[in-house]
Image 1 (cartoon, protein in one colour):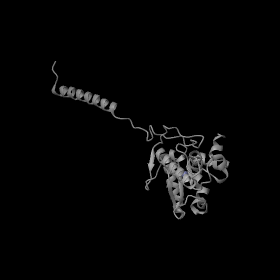
Image 2: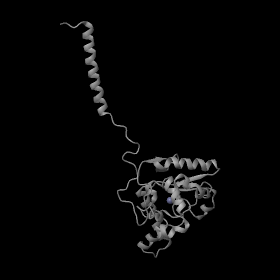
Image 3: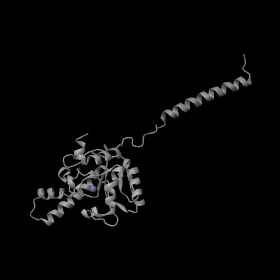
Image 4: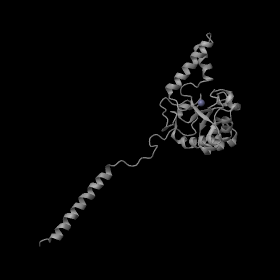
Length: 231
Ligand SMILES: [Zn+2]
Protein backbone atom coordinates (compact mmCIF):
# COMPACT_ATOMS: atom_id res chain seq x y z
CA UNK A 1 0.00 0.00 0.00
CA UNK A 2 1.32 3.35 -0.99
CA UNK A 3 1.14 6.41 1.05
CA UNK A 4 -0.58 9.27 -0.53
CA UNK A 5 1.49 12.46 -0.74
CA UNK A 6 -0.60 13.91 2.04
CA UNK A 7 0.08 10.88 4.33
CA UNK A 8 3.81 11.07 3.55
CA UNK A 9 3.87 14.75 4.41
CA UNK A 10 2.05 14.02 7.68
CA UNK A 11 4.62 11.34 8.55
CA UNK A 12 7.51 13.72 7.83
CA UNK A 13 5.85 16.37 9.98
CA UNK A 14 5.34 13.87 12.82
CA UNK A 15 8.97 12.78 12.72
CA UNK A 16 10.11 16.40 12.63
CA UNK A 17 7.92 17.27 15.62
CA UNK A 18 9.28 14.26 17.51
CA UNK A 19 12.86 15.33 16.81
CA UNK A 20 12.08 18.89 17.84
CA UNK A 21 10.53 17.61 21.04
CA UNK A 22 13.63 15.59 21.84
CA UNK A 23 15.88 18.57 21.14
CA UNK A 24 13.75 20.76 23.40
CA UNK A 25 14.02 18.21 26.19
CA UNK A 26 17.80 18.05 25.80
CA UNK A 27 18.05 21.86 25.84
CA UNK A 28 15.80 22.14 28.93
CA UNK A 29 17.82 19.47 30.68
CA UNK A 30 21.01 21.52 30.35
CA UNK A 31 19.66 25.00 30.95
CA UNK A 32 20.71 26.27 34.38
CA UNK A 33 17.89 26.30 36.83
CA UNK A 34 16.84 29.68 38.14
CA UNK A 35 18.87 30.18 41.29
CA UNK A 36 17.63 32.07 44.32
CA UNK A 37 19.37 35.46 44.57
CA UNK A 38 21.40 34.57 47.64
CA UNK A 39 22.25 31.02 46.68
CA UNK A 40 25.48 30.02 48.35
CA UNK A 41 25.85 33.42 49.94
CA UNK A 42 22.89 33.72 52.29
CA UNK A 43 25.18 35.40 54.79
CA UNK A 44 25.48 35.16 58.54
CA UNK A 45 22.50 34.84 60.86
CA UNK A 46 21.07 38.33 61.32
CA UNK A 47 21.37 37.74 65.08
CA UNK A 48 25.00 36.62 64.94
CA UNK A 49 26.81 37.73 68.10
CA UNK A 50 30.27 39.11 67.48
CA UNK A 51 32.35 40.41 70.36
CA UNK A 52 35.64 39.77 72.14
CA UNK A 53 34.32 36.46 73.53
CA UNK A 54 32.65 35.47 70.28
CA UNK A 55 35.11 36.15 67.48
CA UNK A 56 34.38 35.28 63.88
CA UNK A 57 35.96 32.13 62.50
CA UNK A 58 39.10 32.67 60.40
CA UNK A 59 37.13 31.26 57.48
CA UNK A 60 34.21 33.64 57.97
CA UNK A 61 32.89 35.16 54.77
CA UNK A 62 30.08 37.71 54.61
CA UNK A 63 26.92 37.15 52.60
CA UNK A 64 26.05 38.97 49.42
CA UNK A 65 27.14 42.58 49.78
CA UNK A 66 25.32 45.49 48.22
CA UNK A 67 27.40 48.48 47.19
CA UNK A 68 26.02 51.89 48.05
CA UNK A 69 26.48 54.91 45.83
CA UNK A 70 29.27 56.20 48.09
CA UNK A 71 31.26 52.97 47.78
CA UNK A 72 30.24 51.58 51.15
CA UNK A 73 29.12 47.97 51.24
CA UNK A 74 26.46 46.34 53.40
CA UNK A 75 24.82 42.93 53.65
CA UNK A 76 22.30 42.96 50.81
CA UNK A 77 19.49 41.91 53.17
CA UNK A 78 19.80 45.21 55.07
CA UNK A 79 19.67 47.37 51.96
CA UNK A 80 15.89 47.87 51.52
CA UNK A 81 15.46 48.88 55.18
CA UNK A 82 18.55 51.08 55.07
CA UNK A 83 17.30 52.87 51.98
CA UNK A 84 13.86 53.37 53.54
CA UNK A 85 15.42 54.72 56.73
CA UNK A 86 17.64 57.19 54.90
CA UNK A 87 14.78 58.31 52.66
CA UNK A 88 12.64 59.02 55.73
CA UNK A 89 15.48 60.85 57.47
CA UNK A 90 16.12 63.00 54.43
CA UNK A 91 12.40 63.70 54.11
CA UNK A 92 12.56 64.93 57.72
CA UNK A 93 15.27 67.40 56.73
CA UNK A 94 18.17 65.38 58.19
CA UNK A 95 21.56 64.62 56.66
CA UNK A 96 22.78 61.20 57.80
CA UNK A 97 26.14 59.99 56.54
CA UNK A 98 27.54 56.47 56.59
CA UNK A 99 31.18 56.71 57.57
CA UNK A 100 31.93 53.04 58.09
CA UNK A 101 30.35 49.84 56.83
CA UNK A 102 31.63 46.43 55.78
CA UNK A 103 35.29 45.83 56.56
CA UNK A 104 37.49 42.93 55.58
CA UNK A 105 39.57 41.07 58.17
CA UNK A 106 42.67 42.71 56.63
CA UNK A 107 41.21 46.19 56.99
CA UNK A 108 40.28 45.52 60.61
CA UNK A 109 43.78 44.16 61.29
CA UNK A 110 45.31 47.31 59.79
CA UNK A 111 43.04 49.58 61.85
CA UNK A 112 43.93 47.67 65.01
CA UNK A 113 47.68 47.71 64.31
CA UNK A 114 47.47 51.45 63.67
CA UNK A 115 45.70 52.00 66.98
CA UNK A 116 48.30 49.90 68.86
CA UNK A 117 51.04 51.99 67.27
CA UNK A 118 49.38 55.23 68.33
CA UNK A 119 48.87 53.93 71.89
CA UNK A 120 52.55 52.96 72.08
CA UNK A 121 53.65 56.33 70.72
CA UNK A 122 51.60 58.08 73.41
CA UNK A 123 52.73 55.66 76.16
CA UNK A 124 56.28 54.50 75.37
CA UNK A 125 56.50 52.57 78.63
CA UNK A 126 53.65 50.17 77.82
CA UNK A 127 54.37 46.56 76.95
CA UNK A 128 53.09 45.26 73.61
CA UNK A 129 50.39 43.29 75.44
CA UNK A 130 49.20 46.29 77.46
CA UNK A 131 49.26 48.49 74.37
CA UNK A 132 47.06 45.96 72.57
CA UNK A 133 44.71 45.78 75.52
CA UNK A 134 44.35 49.55 75.58
CA UNK A 135 43.90 49.70 71.79
CA UNK A 136 41.16 47.04 71.97
CA UNK A 137 39.04 49.38 74.09
CA UNK A 138 38.71 51.61 71.05
CA UNK A 139 39.25 49.47 68.00
CA UNK A 140 38.04 45.87 67.91
CA UNK A 141 40.67 43.22 67.43
CA UNK A 142 40.53 41.54 64.02
CA UNK A 143 37.75 38.94 64.02
CA UNK A 144 35.79 40.67 66.76
CA UNK A 145 34.33 43.60 64.83
CA UNK A 146 30.72 43.54 63.71
CA UNK A 147 31.82 45.53 60.69
CA UNK A 148 33.30 42.33 59.25
CA UNK A 149 29.80 40.87 58.98
CA UNK A 150 28.42 43.61 56.72
CA UNK A 151 25.61 44.07 59.25
CA UNK A 152 27.01 47.10 61.09
CA UNK A 153 27.09 50.72 60.03
CA UNK A 154 28.55 53.82 61.59
CA UNK A 155 26.11 56.64 60.88
CA UNK A 156 26.90 60.24 61.71
CA UNK A 157 25.55 63.65 60.91
CA UNK A 158 26.91 65.28 57.77
CA UNK A 159 27.47 68.38 59.91
CA UNK A 160 29.40 66.48 62.61
CA UNK A 161 31.58 63.67 61.42
CA UNK A 162 33.42 63.12 64.69
CA UNK A 163 33.14 59.65 66.17
CA UNK A 164 32.70 60.84 69.71
CA UNK A 165 29.95 61.55 72.20
CA UNK A 166 29.10 64.83 70.47
CA UNK A 167 27.12 62.72 67.98
CA UNK A 168 24.53 62.40 70.70
CA UNK A 169 23.66 66.07 70.29
CA UNK A 170 22.93 65.79 66.58
CA UNK A 171 19.38 65.68 65.26
CA UNK A 172 20.42 62.69 63.15
CA UNK A 173 21.38 60.63 66.21
CA UNK A 174 18.26 61.66 68.07
CA UNK A 175 16.10 60.53 65.16
CA UNK A 176 18.00 57.23 64.90
CA UNK A 177 17.76 56.59 68.63
CA UNK A 178 14.01 57.04 68.34
CA UNK A 179 13.28 55.31 65.01
CA UNK A 180 16.11 53.05 63.80
CA UNK A 181 14.45 49.96 65.32
CA UNK A 182 11.46 50.51 63.03
CA UNK A 183 13.82 49.74 60.15
CA UNK A 184 15.53 46.75 61.78
CA UNK A 185 18.54 48.55 63.29
CA UNK A 186 19.60 48.73 66.92
CA UNK A 187 21.98 51.07 68.72
CA UNK A 188 24.48 48.34 69.44
CA UNK A 189 26.60 49.90 72.21
CA UNK A 190 24.33 51.91 74.52
CA UNK A 191 25.90 54.04 77.22
CA UNK A 192 24.51 52.00 80.13
CA UNK A 193 25.54 48.63 78.65
CA UNK A 194 29.27 49.04 78.13
CA UNK A 195 30.01 46.69 81.04
CA UNK A 196 28.11 43.97 79.15
CA UNK A 197 29.14 44.73 75.57
CA UNK A 198 32.76 45.46 76.49
CA UNK A 199 32.62 48.47 74.17
CA UNK A 200 32.33 52.11 75.19
CA UNK A 201 29.29 54.17 74.28
CA UNK A 202 29.08 54.59 70.50
CA UNK A 203 26.18 56.83 69.50
CA UNK A 204 26.95 56.10 65.83
CA UNK A 205 27.27 52.31 65.57
CA UNK A 206 24.06 50.67 64.40
CA UNK A 207 23.59 46.98 63.79
CA UNK A 208 21.04 45.41 61.47
CA UNK A 209 19.09 42.54 63.07
CA UNK A 210 15.84 42.75 61.07
CA UNK A 211 12.63 44.54 62.03
CA UNK A 212 11.13 41.85 64.25
CA UNK A 213 14.21 41.41 66.45
CA UNK A 214 14.96 45.15 66.54
CA UNK A 215 11.45 45.82 67.80
CA UNK A 216 11.71 43.10 70.47
CA UNK A 217 15.16 44.27 71.58
CA UNK A 218 13.96 47.85 71.79
CA UNK A 219 10.97 46.79 73.87
CA UNK A 220 13.14 44.70 76.20
CA UNK A 221 15.55 47.54 76.99
CA UNK A 222 18.37 44.97 76.78
CA UNK A 223 21.52 45.01 74.68
CA UNK A 224 22.09 42.25 72.13
CA UNK A 225 24.20 40.10 74.47
CA UNK A 226 21.51 40.19 77.17
CA UNK A 227 18.60 39.78 74.78
CA UNK A 228 20.11 36.72 73.07
CA UNK A 229 20.25 35.05 76.49
CA UNK A 230 16.48 35.40 76.79
CA UNK A 231 15.49 33.85 73.43
ZN1 LIG B 1 31.10 50.84 64.14
